[in-house]
Amino acid sequence: MKAWQFEGTGKPISLNEVPEPVPGPGEVVIDVKAAGLCHSDIMYMEVGEVSMPFLPMTQGHENAA
Image 1: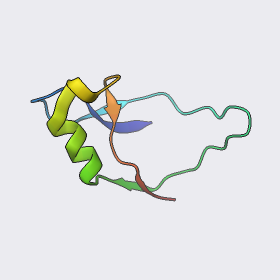
Image 2: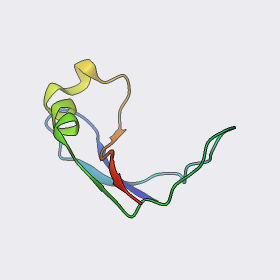
Image 3: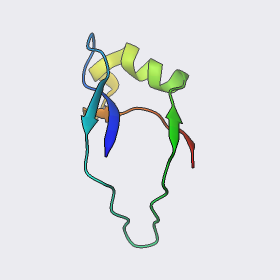
């Protein structure tokens, strides 16, 4: 599947191929039709790697199923 990902300060977000998610015990996978960026996503990109525990970070947590 494709995901827009933040890869580092000063770099544009990149459309990358990522593995399909696999649900764990008590979890489900939802088929998301669209996801939008919000102020939190923009803040992470502006603050940069200092606040990021891991990169790349998949952007868009405002989902529509």
